Length: 345
Ligand code: SF4
Image (cartoon, rainbow, N blue to C red):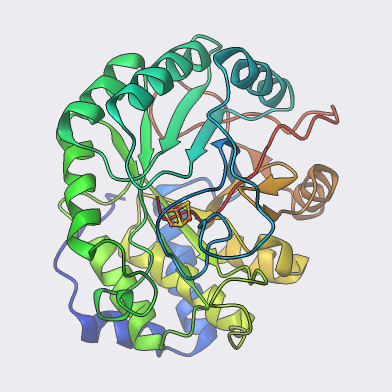
């Protein structure tokens, strides 16, 4: 059966109507679409390392790396090439196939990009797919990273355009769209999603997914983060999102962007196994693997392995081509991951 063409013209009403479906109906639709495009029992495994932690000048209201919030995160310098390569080797040995590197910058200076390019090239040389999240990028910077061997660039939209101003004041929504355009123009694949549970309405969750789906190209990876509430950040104390609403968000993302990898990212530690299982059924097929996501906890490696065994899930096999990354979850005990976030950078 031929899969239907990807759409880029979703209306807000259509997306809202999907959210409003009876839960079982929504999951049935999402899972049916998932099976048309993906192996329903395979999950991509990525590792995330913070190569430059903290001290960020931005004011993202959820983020412990913002220098202006007293969260206990210490600002660090960019890691050396050797130090990153050692972590990447460990991650590869532990079964990760894609190595994501995050740096808490508003936008890197050209000299930072030159250093990151060196790091990317070395990590790529290990046979890993590479992804970076470094903040806003110019077209030239994107080209430099592409030439160094970068496969993906992560830059999240965070939330719906109309809620964005409640969360971030130090850059505009359009800045994010511009960076995504620069990244697409040089042929980098995009990893782009957002965060839910920040006090937005369901309509605003629909707005985030509508905006993602109506980009000129669907992001190849779509991380859906659940707010991790960190003391000291303005969003600490926000009312928690109903877990079933999170599952609905995953399901709608799957329906809107059928061919993309939908990733469970930050906030997974707060989900019990049953909710994660529902997310996998609803169309999530990618996770971060390791002890930590930028600066928040993540279920440990053993727990992930155990959950995969209980659900008969397997990690995607390594293939040369883009999204279908791989890696078996191996029986080593290297956590691989450094710090991570649902970083909007
Ligand atoms: S989410 Fe990224 S850009 Fe925003 S404050 Fe944190 S590190 Fe900086």
